[in-house]
Image 1 (cartoon, rainbow, N blue to C red):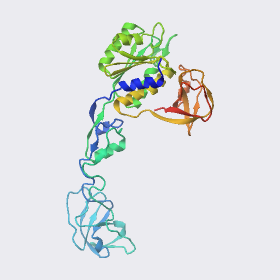
Image 2: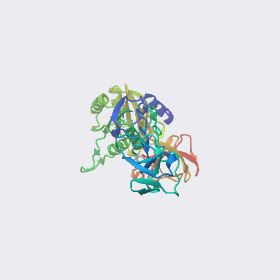
Image 3: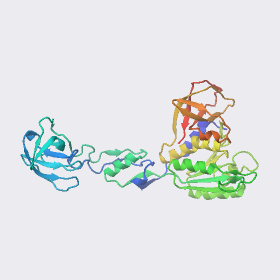
Image 4: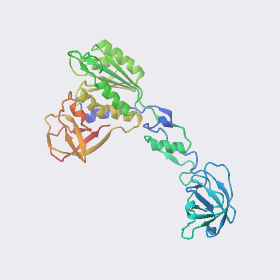
Length: 391
């Protein structure tokens, strides 16, 4: 068996960044930007009004000014302001050449075809004028490479006229479930059978991480069937997740099947609970995980190894960690790294009941995994521990 830290290092060393693809900006949120994007334009591209009002010469603010014309937002007309005149302007619309301030419409008295600024109003040089390039100059950086795109980034890209961006591809995933006892929810449950929850839990996490290309296959507890399915999966998918069949029972074929299918084994068994029988191997750049069958162990390994590997593959940041104070003391009885279902609130974390890997009831309340280090035996109340927040 190897340590948790060593297992993570091995997986990280084999998780190579996936190729770059181009996506329309509306399909890019959640993807990591593959290249730095610079603005192809300056913004604003023209002198622009930030207010509905009148463009004037500042030195003429005390005069009665004739209304020369109007420049509504969206017009392509260009005007030069004449002396003794004012031009009606609108929010987002252009400013006439020569004008050096805008007086908002509420500050003026309209007299026939003239305006007069109210005497109690303060008007400053440059008021309500957005100068060309005052937000962004052409060829300045919009978004740095490696940024995971959010909706606000999409608006920024659109404002610069950009419709497609280069992003790091997300992995395709095959989920291979072993176990003759598994029945899909919605079917009749016979004696000795259990409803499969792993495929649903794994898919939900993958979809939350933005993974779209997911296939699910149910395998017989048969060595040759397992080998055939692994062979098929590594031809098509970047990431293969097998659940169950990784321990040492008579029907636990996964490690042997992986090796016979040409998977290079990097480790099998980690000093942890739950999830001790974890298997990891590769075939070229394909990553293969053999996860235990109990859902508690599956989800623990998903957070510790699978989702971080996905982040490494596509430059995302799915897993968020922090530290918290343990609310009550806890005695650890095993010389392994232990991951416990916890509830985190206001800087404190509570160890929930029902910690066995087959027990699912605590997952209804849990919002994190608590990590207790291998060498710890007793953790006092208020001691800081590392936690992994649920996505």
